[in-house]
Image 1 (tube, helix red, strand yellow):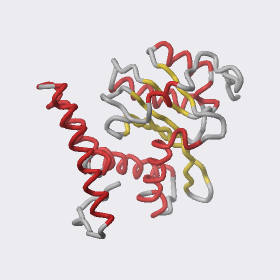
Image 2: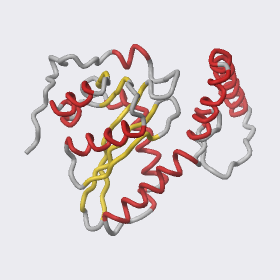
Image 3: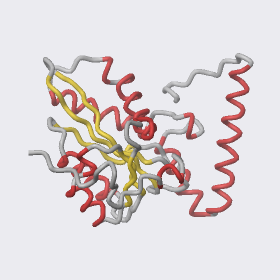
Length: 231
């Protein structure tokens, strides 16, 4: 039996729908802003599985994920149990769509218990959660659409392997052509030595990189191909 949603369209019930948009879709530090969502995947002869994931907007890394044959509140609670086992002191601003899993009383109670502030997309605006939708597009293009998965276990193992690759080996243009793991490690090392100076240098580096790559594309100069994909 599905749990009744605790938040109506007219009354957000304490959930800060505008906070995420006021602050923007970027983060200044790790575990400052998380986004989350669920996507449907098929295997075998039309059987369905549901993948829940949490993405950190700072390092663009997947914090935690969970796969289930059922799309329900326990699925998202399991995902966040993993996330807070990994980062027990994290108190991020959490953005999601208005799915019943995220508006359920049990989920809201758990988020309140761990000190998480919830933010939700506007009604009918799936692009309000664009970073998470973008990750689903990458995962499906680079992994899911390339194979036919005969069974649930094969799908699960392939997802685990891909997310490990995404976090540790896949270069991202938004991170200055670093992997999420490299970007986070660099931030931790340099920020410990001189936090103010590091943030300034990081902003300058990324800004210059975006400007230069934009200029190169305008004059049709092709960049060297790297051994991993960049987005």
